[in-house]
Length: 242
Ligand code: NAD
Image (cartoon, rainbow, N blue to C red; front, side, top):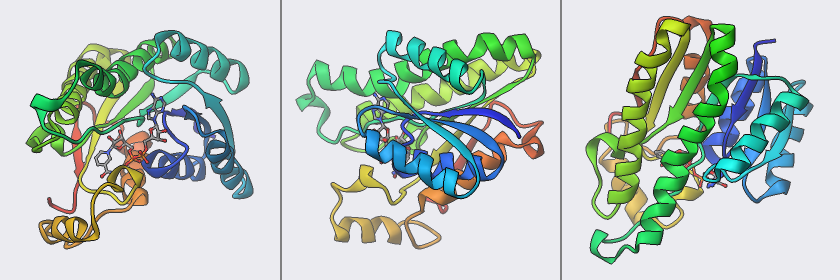
C-alpha cells in the first residue's frame, strides 16, 4: 500500500484515469466529485473490481468550507492523504471583452482557489510526516496562452507559479510539488470543439493525434512514485509535442 491519495474532480476525464492508475499502483484513492455521484460511484466500483480501494467524497473545491469538510471526511474514512492531485478544473471559451466578472471569478475559483484550499488542508499532515506529494494538473495554455481562453490560461499560469513557489517552500520538509501540463486530451472539456477543429489540433501536434486521459494519468502516477523522488518544482508537458 502506498497510502492515501486524494484526486479532485475524479468522476470523469483525466481525474478518473488518474484515480484508476493510482489505485492500480497501490494507492487508496479518495475520489472527489462535485455533482455527479453516480459517476464517482462508478469509478470506485471499477477500482474495487480491479482489487483496489476507493471511496467517493462530494465537495466543490472552490468552496473553502467544503474543502475543509472534504479533508475531515477523507481523514476519517481512509486516513490523511500523502498524495494530493489537484485535477478539478473548468474551461471558459470566449472573447475577454465579453467575459463577465462572475465568469472570470468562477474560472479562478475552481482552477486556482481550489488548488490553494486543497494544498492548505493537505500540508499540515504532510509537514508532520515530513513527506508528501502534490501534483497539479495545469495546461499547456498556462505557459503558451491561447486565444479566447485568457482566463483559463491565466488560471493555469497561476497554478504553474503556485507549483514552483510551493515546491521551494515545502521541499525542505520532504514534500514534492509538481505539475503536469497536458496538451489537447480527449475528454468532455473539449466537447465544444468540432471534429474538424479536433483534426486541426491533431495536425498541429507533432505526434499527429490528440492525447488520452490514460496518457496523462501515467505521468501523474510516475510523479507520485519513488522513481520521481528527486523531482520537484517541475512542469511536465504531456502534449505530443504541441
Ligand atoms: P472534465 O471536464 O472531463 O473534468 C473536469 C472535472 O472537474 C469534472 O469531473 C468536474 O466535475 C470537476 N470539477 C469541476 N469543477 C469542480 C469543482 N468546483 N469542484 C470539484 N470538482 C469540479 O475535463 P478534463 O479534461 O478531464 O480536465 C481535468 C483537468 O485537466 C482540468 O484541470 C483541466 O483544466 C485539465 N486539462 C485538460 C485538458 C484537455 O484537453 N482535456 C488539457 C489541459 C489541461
